Image 1 (tube, rainbow, N blue to C red):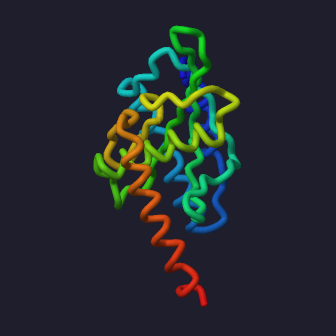
Image 2: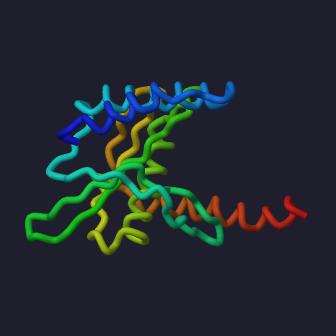
Length: 172
């Protein structure tokens, strides 16, 4: 994230699009607003020594107790430990302006990002919890990676178990 040209070019490209309907007009305006907000928050984000890369457009889902969860990081962070071990983290952007995240919600997302890195990005290195962060574009808050992951994953696993047991009765 040293060169902001990618963000500026994206804004320029979106600004030139001609919307075919009201939905597309709102989507384009929302995307421009999200990029501008993200750009404004870059000084508040501590990348440490990590190199930021765009996340995959399509990513596997994290599966917990039979429930598929879309965690796909918009940005992945790559670094090395002091001993030279490859480390990986990710940034999850939260877009809904009408529902900003509170700290506990962001911590749950951070824990899932850490698990996603462990489960899906293992080829890039071990997950670095401090670099599994959440950025809430609605409130402008940058939530660093959460440290206490196990308890939060246990809570998420319990919720997923409940969803898995109730879902068959709902869909029939």
